[in-house]
Length: 190
Image (cartoon, rainbow, N blue to C red; front, side, top):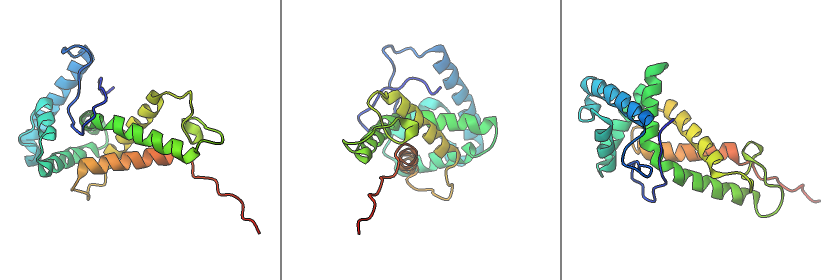
């Protein structure tokens, strides 16, 4: 799991802690694994030269140097495209870094889903093509996180600019495509 994140109102990549400042054991283990991986990658890859720990990655992504964001995220996405455990670790790292964008994507998907089904007619669950009244945001959030994972693992590496924005947009588009059925056209009248 990616850890615990609260909804951020801004576009910052910084994660929030739960109610305490001490992360859980699982979170600490993930951060240690990320630090070890980033340390070795920063020695090998010039794009990751200044990013040797998860905290340093967070600082870089919180800065306003968007060209550096693109360079660092693109280098990480190149590694995420690798099959096997190494690609999964870096994909989890990028997912962790992008987790602050998930609540915004979820909100846009919910609004678009409700607009697509309108106020009349059946409102079906996630697999049925809409957002139902009894469905929780956690279901949609889980679907969005799954789509984000897919976008990270399959990111088109030829796209080097606006990497974070492209990930958010592509995730939103694929989630909408999966969760919203196309509108039913009325039969033609003659």
